[in-house]
Length: 119
Image 1 (cartoon, helix red, strand yellow):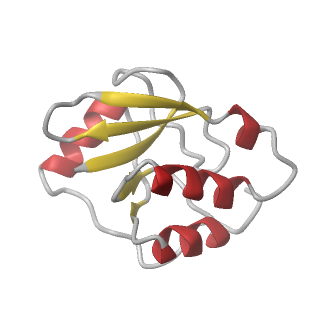
Image 2 (cartoon, rainbow, N blue to C red):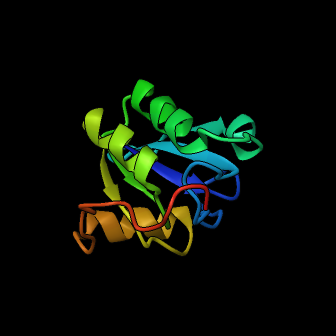
């Protein structure tokens, strides 16, 4: 399974970036092998508007089924839901720790956005 994790860095030991649409990087991780692809999210980081929607499209296009992040706004959440991507909010620590928490089943899938737009 492919999982997207927002990240402040380019590897599994980087801290989770709490912002989804404006995260510095998004790692697309294969949960079985821990192989990952780094998506540079600079264009969305500096976007005037629509960062969450663009980031949601990006991870959906990469085949991610789940997003682990800190905060996800309403437009991004709607886009992710429409693409069939499940969202787990309130994730902290390193990317590796977030994946471990997920694999242990210690997360809950969000039913709604957990911040207002343009956060």
